[in-house]
Every structure is written in C-alpha cells, then in structure tokens.
Image 1 (cartoon, rainbow, N blue to C red):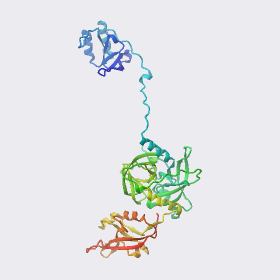
Image 2: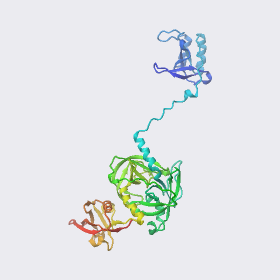
Image 3: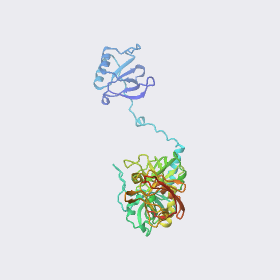
Image 4: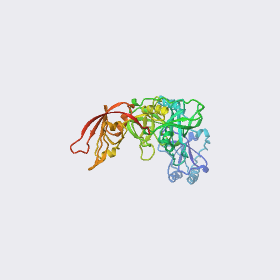
Amino acid sequence: MSCIPTSWSRAGCQPMYSLLSTSTCIGRPCVAFIPVQRSSATRCCCRDSESIKSRVQSGDTASSSGRSSHDVRMVVCNRRSAQLAIAAAAAASVVPCPPAMALTLQDVTPQVVPAGALSAREEAIIDIFERNTNSVANVFDITLQGGAGRSGAVDTPEGNGTGFVWDSDGHVITNFHVLSSALRQLRPAQLQGEGSPRVAKLTLFNKQGYQQSYDAALVGADRSKDIVVLRLLNLQEALQPMQLGESGKVRIGQQVLAIGNPFGFDHTLTTGVVSGIGREIQSQAGAIIGGGIQTDAAINPGNSGGPLLDSQGRVIGVNTAIFTNTGTSAGVGFAIPIDIVRSVVPQLIQYGKVVRPALNIQLSTDQVARALRVSSGALVQSVGPNSAAAKAGLLPTRRGLTGIITGDVITGINDRKVNKAADLALALDSFQVGDRVTLKVRRGEERAQGTQDLTLSLTLEEGSSS
C-alpha cells in the first residue's frame, strides 16, 4: 500500500490521502486515519510504523477526544508495515480503505495564467526597438574569416561589429576599429574613398523582414574620432535612416537603449541609464575622444559602432568602448557623442576626409608631462616647421646642455581652460580652419626662478583626419 495526496484539508492544512495497492507503495511510513462516515478520503500523517503497529495490535485506536476504535481506523502505508497492519486490522475488524480514483492528465496539469497587459514603459521600449532595429546592421571586416560561435565559450573575432543607417542613399556609420584590419591595408588615398575599396560585408533586414547581405565600400575614415562611413553596393531599395538627437542635452540618469550584435548575436537590445557625461574615451583605435557618454546599458564586443538611443528613439551616441578587466560588460560603457559624429560624417561623405582645424603641434602624453613635473595644462612636445604655431613663437620640449628643457605648456585657448591634452583637442573641435585664436601659455617649468605666463595669437590651420 501507499498513500498519495488527492486533496488538501483546510483545517490545519493537512494532506488528504487514499490507499492504493502495494505495487505503487512509495515506501514511506505513513498512517491513515479513516473516518467511518467518510471512508472515501483519509487524513494522513507520517508516524513511526512500529509504534502504529503496536497500537493497532493492542487495540489502542481511540483518539485523544475519546473516539472508539470504530470511529477512527488506522492503516500503515509502507510495504512491510502495511502487511503487519493489515493482519492487525483484520483482527480488530478494521475496514480497509477503498482504492483511490486514478489521476488524469488534466488533474496534474497546472492552470495557465493568462498574460496580463504590458506596462506603458514596456510598450514604449518595444516600440523604440521595432521602429529602429531594421536600421541597425551587422558589420564584418572582409579580411577576417569566421564568425561568433554559439556554443560553449563564445568567441567574437576582431572585425565583427555594428553599424546604423545614416541616410536613404545607403550610407552606414560604424567604428574605425571594427574595420581596422581592412583599413590598415589601404593606401592614404584609398582611406579617403579613392577607388571605393570594398572593406566590409553588412547584413540588414529588408522591408519583407528578411536579412539581406550587402558588400560595402569605404567612403571615408576618421581615425581620431573612431568613425568610418561605408556605402552599400548593389542597393535595391531605399533604407530607413535613424533619427538623430542632441548629445549636448543629455543628462545623467536619463534612460538609454543600445541595439547591436554582441558576440555576433544580431539585433540585441539592452537598456540602462546615462551614468556619466563628459568622459574621455580612449578607443581601440588609440584615439582619445572627449565628451563621451557613459552608460550602464550592457555594451559588449560586437556592439561597437551601434547606436545609443534616448527614450524617444533618437541616436545620441555611437557605442565604441567598455571599461573592463574581463573583456565583457562590467556596467561601464562609452559612446561617442552624436554631436561630434554629426560634424564628422558630412565631411567624410563630401571629401573622404575631415578638414579639421589644428595647431599642427604634437602634445606629450599626460604620463610624460607628469614625469617632467607638469601638473596641469597641455605640454608641447614638438612644433611643425613653418606652422602658424612656430611663427607665433610656441616652443617645443627639447634637449639642452643641462638636460631636457620643458616646452611651453598651453593652459587655455580663448576663454576655455586647458587642464590636459584632451581638453585642447576637444576645444579645437569647436573651431573652423582659418579661425583666429588666443593661446594662454606657461613657459619655463624647469626654471628655478619660476615660470612666465604668455599670450600668443595664431590662425588655425588644416589638420589631418587620420
């Protein structure tokens, strides 16, 4: 015999049991109390089988309330004890339990709870994803073979990233470092789009909802901002460009969404908030980009080049880097502000390069500056010959008879303060070639008698976009 539950008692929440044949005995000592008036259901609880047997054999079956042995019957429900209990019950004229009804599939199938309505926030996120996902591309460097694995340890090769549609003419934006292998093999003129070199393969959803592959040619590249513009070849239908926002109005705490292809899993959506602004981003291409947007939305290998969207579905940044010790998302991701991208892309489409204002000088890294005891400002390492900076009298770091002579330190440009090299690079992005600017300079860092503050005026020249 064995006891299996058929219903639950409300009084004391004790399980109700019925007896079955010994062939299905579960082997657990269990005593069944069988009310005479309700022999079809038994109240069951586990007891020591030997004590139950002795009680049955001694005829002590009365309950604490004074019921007689004919009011409550007891049966032991494990295999050996059941046999002893049956014999004892026969001697005491105990009536055995009738067999329980067999359970049906419907009895053991849990009830399905209907899905409730989605919240307004969930509906908004779904709407943003569905409106924009067809404009997000999976980008592959054609010089690298392989793809993202889908089993075990997932491996994403260099050259797999994300891009998004810039306009209906087939221009797509991605990161420079996503295609660095292909771009390294091009001549300088080709980096400006000469000959339309084919550098990538892209996949996009078409209007019918199917993924379609395209070859993509290089239009132009800006390594210093980690931006590349591609043009889809053999385009047969107009594409849907993404709507651009304003990164200058981004606030910490606002909701953001990222769509990309992390580890090769295409069209993946992650959400989070803006967790920082004005960050300096050191991209995988080696460039330092100012004004970066920090987010805790999961950004992983393969997300590079994809859009970072605000809660209205507008692009406010291009995902480019993560801060991590493991190679995967640690909740600190960075995006290039869309305001910078908006100033770069039209020039790449028009000229194949960025006509960027520059001083045509080289600055020391912050590490070198600290080694030379320069605590603030941008240390000038070298000055281009015949440049406007050279003509204005800006001095580089150089070697003298007594050792290294520290060059001029730029502490400001017009009304903007310069605390480090990245501040100067960010400030120059707000000017145009031909603008007249005023530099605030500190000279003589190595002098024991103190430094000298100077003001130099010069005209910004065209710099390189690579």
